[in-house]
Length: 309
Ligand SMILES: Nc1ncnc2c1ncn2[C@@H]1O[C@H](COP(=O)(O)OP(=O)(O)OP(=O)(O)O)[C@@H](O)[C@H]1O
Ligand SMILES: [Mg+2]
Image (cartoon, rainbow, N blue to C red; front, side):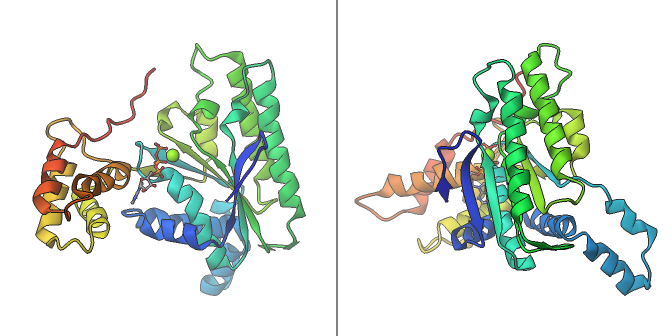
């Protein structure tokens, strides 16, 4: 990963990349999203493949292929905290790069693009982001419909940038920013460039309808089910001598929503529970199931993201 002192982007990632491939395969419970993302990306980056499909199966170009025309290359990842939005956004380009056999570069837009509130600042920074992406995309050698490389623009924590222009208390400056964002997406869309845009948000309902309407697909992210918690624990506590029944016991405790109305997020499990289990035993003893169980009983899951409006 390259960190930048750039105001527009705070990181640039290149694919294929073994670490990001591993992050992608470690994501639990997102198999449908992964499959859909690959298919969507493929059709957006190589629109001719839809016509080839039609020729192959019908001997002509059926009207249904038009359903994909004019779609903008925008994916929305929406859902609760710690459910894998950022991780999937930063790792799925690896799969696309491997499947299409092309290099891909991801530009992660800096949160600084919101500016410091000076008049016109956010608007001109957002416009500059899309100009840079267009400039980079133009440089990509392309042989017509099959791009030889592609770009992903990641707009993480997009709430602040793309919130609804209807909110009456919304500052004029923010409204202008949303307009610049929409113009930017329109500008790189329409199949002109091999570019995909991913926006992540905790609050789909707060996004501007004009942004929502432009999305080619919306992906919903949720807290893990019991089976998914069990899968994370089985991988994370491997080698400690636990039985499969014991993983299920821990999962039941950690996923229990009776007390609070919610269970653990994925990041509660990977970033807090698993390290805590080790921490409890370290340095004098191995991990014991009873210790892990007591720790699970006392563990507090992160509350769901709530809309403050
Ligand atoms: N589906 C998943 N499977 C396994 N681990 C996961 C999954 N989702 C999240 N995690 C773990 O949680 C960590 C945080 O996830 P991530 O930052 O992608 O969440 P997010 O949805 O972007 O959260 P936020 O809304 O707070 O930005 C990851 O590094 C990973 O360890
Ligand atoms: Mg995130």
